[in-house]
Amino acid sequence: IGTIGDDIRGQIQKQSLEGTGVDISGVIVREQCPNQTAYIIIDESTGERTVFWQRHECLRLSSSEVRVNDIASSRWLHIDGYDTEAAAHAASLAQQHGVPVSLDVDTVYPGFESVLRNVNYLVASSSWPSRFTGDPDPFAALAGLEREYEFTVTVMTLGDRGSVALHDGTWLYSPAFRVSTADTTGAGDVFHGAFCYAMLKGMPLEQALDFSNAAAALNCTAIGARGHIPVLSEIEALVAGACSGALRRRVDPEIADRLGSKVAQASRVSS
Image (cartoon, rainbow, N blue to C red):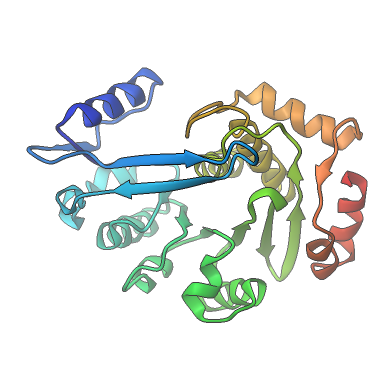
């Protein structure tokens, strides 16, 4: 659900999604509007990237363009905050129809509280909780958000340190998987997609974090935002290798120590 421009970039985006079997019946083509564009510079030594991104105002999705049936007929709604009013409306519709809502957020948007109050699963970047709340401690900030908005699960992605989650007052830490990194572009998006899949499949939260981290790590092994979105068997093989001790994971001892003995014990197996 969203908008694209009617230029060649929009056509490429549309054809690419259709080619992978994505239902884009909810996508609106804006006439005489350029598609969003991103130029990405990659550090060859680390795979880290810098993105120069442009999205014209004509691409903004309005609340009136969100179709009720698209939301009501869904098993899960995943949103971001670019079009805040539309995202808030979609999340509200989802709650009315019993559809779980997950949120990918890395930017502080005006009026974003209207979105958060209808979110079940918050997946935030490592810097967002502090920027949104003003609390310099991201873990304390995340815990405060969980209390205020009563999320079912609150997740924070940590890049090459893995991810953490907070559920019913208990922290979980999933260390990152060690891979040969070519490009980190798209890692967060792949994590979010894998997390939604894991939740729909009923995976326990700890398993879902490992699954999502593994999917994101594998995408980093090739160039491009969708450089190597892995198939299910690849993700399962990477997770199994780490669980058996054949593959090591990148454990951050400070995070493991901070979040408790249960997490630290699991992390020591992976170090």
